[in-house]
Image (tube, helix red, strand yellow):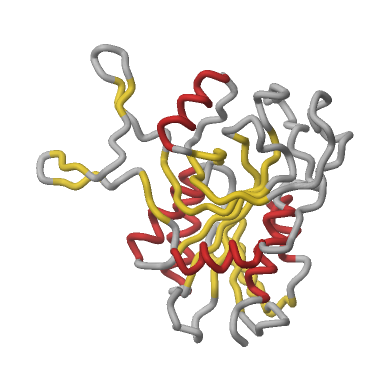
Length: 269
């Protein structure tokens, strides 16, 4: 992470329900409207770190637009993303937390003439123009800081009444480090989830992290994503029509926010 300590750390999150678990525990400084964006300046008391918080909205376009705004307006020394995600492994359950060591845009693939899908995971050229890699490592220093912050910490158990799988013994959360997959796709088909995990080694999927990450890479800004698992389609297929009650506002993003605060506690004053 850069030593540009005169600039804030930016935090971009998809939903207000997620962001409030973080924002409500920081000291407010100022708030400003810039076009469609509500920028909230806050301070982390223990480290004195100033942050600018942004709820970008759900989806890859919103995440990219919001992150571009943060990078252009504030030249942040790092961009942090957190929120909820769907599991890509059967053992990752609601309440577990994933430290993103990398992101992958799993919706950036080709459908070949054979009907097969081809994922170009490295950059390639089309008529002299470079198409960016779909796989991006997160900032190693931030990943190390997050994994260190997770040592000795156990995420709160997900409430059993809020969708915990009946066939699995209730337990506290756990923390794992791995790949976060992103696309404007909610994957429920088990074979497809298994294929994504096999191809990308992904632990979970969301709809924002990879887009925000790509913008940060273009600006040379360190990026990290932290995700907490809200649903596992292997155990309970989510009802995604209408109001998605599988995402309880009291829980989504809360454990990832907890870990992010522990990370900030470890920043030098």
